[in-house]
Length: 300
Image 1 (spheres, rainbow, N blue to C red):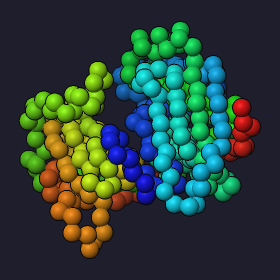
Image 2: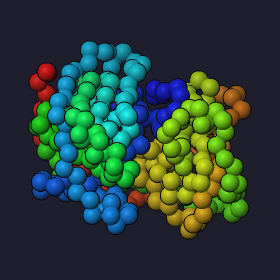
Image 3: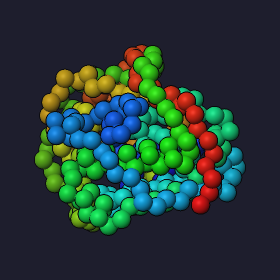
Image 4: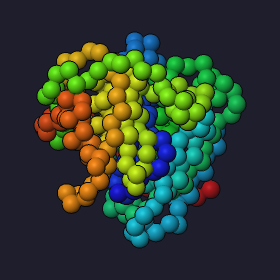
């Protein structure tokens, strides 16, 4: 498993990349294939994205994925813009990024793509970027998802459909009431320096695999916590806590084996001991994205 140092939102298997925090899926305006809606605000739920990239470069990366450690990642930068840059990105990652699903929710990617990664650069013009800055965060994410979905359709000839299939999930429950607290503590100077002019998210991950990770929350809901855990463990997590507050905490964790002497706890232990929460395995119908067709893109 590879990890990133600095601010990241989750760690994912070597096969792919860090999944960026884009909780975006919608039905694009002029396409018939349903894309699972995930917007809560009525205005966002009714929003129909239409934007596309003006220029895009997709090139196969020459790194040796089978050789072990591969650095990969990328994002839209600035955050509310059309400017996308992704490095060493697998097809599975590109699909999960575009459709906001976990790896386990995607089926049908051909084996020939298992060890192939791509470098992607794409953008629209300044007019589109200016429009994106006037949208809500969710609407901008919907547009960015639409851009990448269209790019995959055009360059990879991607065709998909959705099915409900029985899958492994988790329920997030309360085991020790009162452990989650709302302290109202403001962000530290270090956090303000890291994020600069960008808003600090309600919950985020900081650190790396060598020194361990911190999960820092400022006014996070249990739904936010469930989403982070879903990202971390690669399965849908249902918030079954019944809690409605907003909570603050700093979890210090370390991914380790049983014989590791590092004093930090792994994440699954820390949420129980410090937050009074537990993940319970379950099986539910899970919305699954089925790959019907995909081709290797021509480079340009």
